[in-house]
Image (cartoon, rainbow, N blue to C red; front, side, top):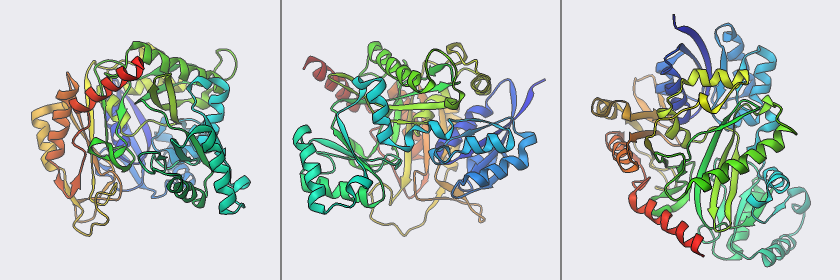
Length: 470
């Protein structure tokens, strides 16, 4: 007899739909979902036994929802970073006894980029760029001229080609980079000042040249088990033009590493993340279940000097986890119980040797595509669902920032509306399926067309060859 299991999912975006989809495919468990959602996501509503809308994902309201259903919930998963940073695991476990798969508030490492840099300086300085933290308490009272003088002095030491980042999390959208967002010091200062005025400390760090990868690993507090690397596309438009977004798409190769990497690069990532894990876990090989979940979703930059860290997050990546979950061969519910029970091992996690490509369709006024859009936001997914008759499970459709309304129609909201995941024997095969899915979505949406494109990958490969020769 298949065992019943009740699962809380704290949801926002396509990432949560992918999590629910993966768990619902368990061969060994009869899954029942209790979803705390930011809106009436049509995918989540279809799967949820109980569904509640909590627009701000307030931790106390999530706790109350869990408490009302705790006799039917075996464990919970938190997908977005906001509740993790606010301590959703601490509160839910303390008040309801339901185990949560996400780090505790203490280990919500993405709460402060400055703290990340200081941690790396202690445990793996080789992965850190040169940096300086400008604290509002130290510099906020100074005149504009004094603040400029302090920044200019650091730039004189480092050079003007830098990245300027807010300390607080901004979903990947607050970073300014020399050559992309500003080309002189006055423009840099305006970006710096906008972050300061938003209430955040600011980090200035050297600009790193290279190719990016996203590294993710599941954790039970004692063991880290990595999943295959992915490549995210943060910039809004083709050819990496436009502003930073939450991620317009991503790809995964058939191997554990990406085409511009080799096995040594992957081992370098694993070595660095293990050092961070050891530093947070404590001495020896003991357990620290405060790190349970996916505490290290790490953005790496592969440079001439080796792998460097851009930032670390304490939850699954969006869109990167959508590349991985559809090709998970291991039973996902068993994987969750392994994390809770502290017996996670590499043998518990196996993926098909398939390539995947994720493409997002987004609203007309997202990412600077249009300054404003006052037209109809209705989105019809029936065409892409019919396409699944052609592709079967090689096409996945994950609604994100969209909602089902009382009129029976679904509408795009303000962020990334829906993603399609193509699965194939090569990146190009997977990309073709993903883009075919995008073309069959009816609505005023736009997307990048070059996610995983051959010319993009070839450029990355040649760039790494040039860096290594240099």
